[in-house]
Image 1 (tube, one colour):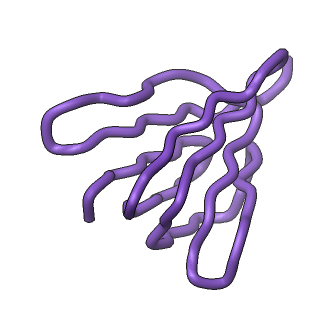
Image 2 (cartoon, helix red, strand yellow; image 1 turned 90 degrees about the vertical axis):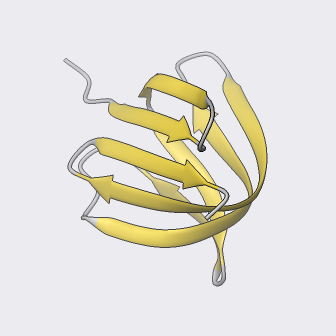
Length: 81
């Protein structure tokens, strides 16, 4: 069985994405980064966009700012932070 990430992206009034992904890409002050299954615990302020990688495609969400929290295989992103 292939390990996947559970990704939840939300702001104060809306859930933008809630589902599984193979990987996630975003940007912080140091540049572009990826989060893969079994990633170390990680917290970062993010900007520009979030790319959710699936088996067959990618979904891109443009953002101004947010907070990404990775713990185990769960990714929570809070937009507008």
